[in-house]
Length: 296
Image (tube, rainbow, N blue to C red; front, top):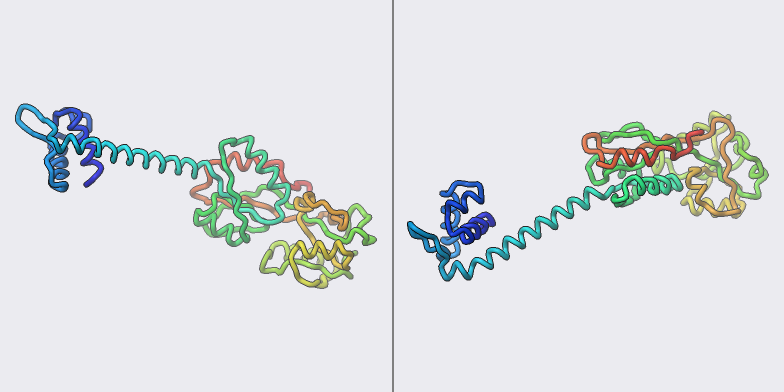
């Protein structure tokens, strides 16, 4: 039994005329007659009393008609629900994020909410390689990444420069200055994430230290939270975090200092699929405009 057969039968039952039913359905009369006959054979009942002069419902047809209408109505409701799910999917931005976006993300979401008030945003946190792969496969509509130059199947749109600041114990002598020279940190161990977790950041910091005349002494490993706690307890360590993240932290135990001179920054980009970018891309890029540390 097919939905079209039910629809043809209901139309004939309403018109009681194969020709008029065919006109309503925009198909030839023979196709209507053929499909209704197939429906009757499949169900083992005659629903229509056919004669050269008229078409009437049989007793079986009268009993079957409301059931056929109910099936068609259920199918129409199912289509409406499916269409609604598609609309909801189209009105949802699946956005890849990472730790450290800080107030950048807050400002982007706030502005995007004004530009596209009907848009729902689903935030997905994942490592950078996973974010890029999910954009390439369509699992994410867009993702923020830093320091990445290219990736197969992904278009990278520059959005801002992400400035890095040095983190020192608040009681360290250097913490009282408005900024810090990297060369003054040569004697302190540097505590960073392992390079495999964030190659662009680690390479940037290590290269900057070497340009300042020293190779940083590696400190003990650990999470950023543990590192900040240790530095806050006046451990002889230093690290770097994104300025956007530092602006959200409320602590008097550590000092956040920009690097003297040109500073340290990584380019941030919005990754999208080159052939299927999100429909809200223009609004998203506008929300990114004016965000970031452009003076770094």
